[in-house]
Image (tube, rainbow, N blue to C red; front, side, top):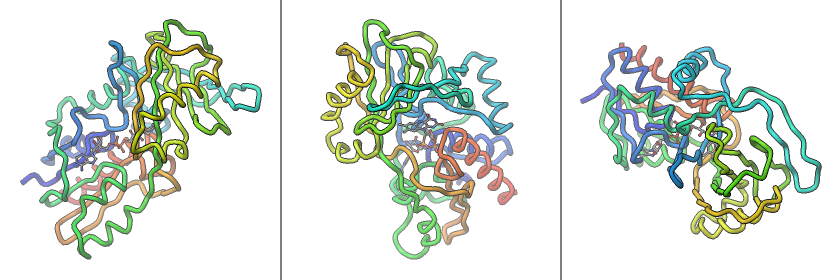
Length: 310
Ligand SMILES: Cc1cc2nc3c(=O)[nH]c(=O)nc-3n(C[C@H](O)[C@H](O)[C@H](O)COP(=O)(O)OP(=O)(O)OC[C@H]3O[C@@H](n4cnc5c(N)ncnc54)[C@H](O)[C@@H]3O)c2cc1C
């Protein structure tokens, strides 16, 4: 029996598993998906990858900066922009400068795949219960993690702490024959349907005339059972916002569990239970929910487990 089973091969789970493996701790890493990456999701549409989950990442932590510098050196990650637009139906467009936003020529999933290169990942393994192991890491959003806990009081302390709600988002990819807009990405304020638009060709660096628009959580919520019904209204909203013609191709992806709501400062969870240690990590663990938070949470939980198991 491996001392640690990590469930979830998104960025946090892969980072946690790497930390354990680097310290010589045997680890089993499983994911229900066909590929690693979780919400850093890139789907092949019309012969190229489109980022349908995370749009970009930013870098503050020195440890993450070292990982990103290595990706950049090897041509996997690229600096996209530090200037984004701010659009609103009732106001003049503005631009806003901020931290450098990073993208990836191969799609953000390729970065998680790179980190997982030396790990054995059991893909297509959808666990329905906590696996038997001295330590189990749930590297996923709270609503998914809580489903794996056994009924009854044995894991009540863990269940109580896995209480963060996550909001849904619909992501629409739309392709035109050529680019007729001039923005890298845009926060959309005060809009009934859209919250964000990104130029996928510019962030990926291949120049393809493809936009990805994200819905507001409020628009996504009633569309989760039949998300495809939202494709036409989202396309119309995007065309209206940017003054565009009809796209030649669209694709809609549903994220039922996309972004954590509220706040939580703890970097990870680690509890003793009657079945062994249970940990949790991911972007729901840390002050701001983002790619870097998921990386840091996975790293910190990995280190804490190494210390406990030594
Ligand atoms: C629409 C959208 C836009 C975003 N935009 C940005 C952005 O612009 N910038 C930014 O920094 N972040 C953004 N994010 C957030 C970013 O994607 C996440 O912070 C990060 O990918 C989280 O990684 P994770 O490892 O915590 O979780 P996940 O990537 O969700 O990984 C969890 C994994 O667990 C697996 N899993 C779940 N349940 C089971 C089970 N029972 N058995 C086996 N496997 C299971 C899943 O398949 C998944 O692979 C966005 C997210 C979404 C959805």
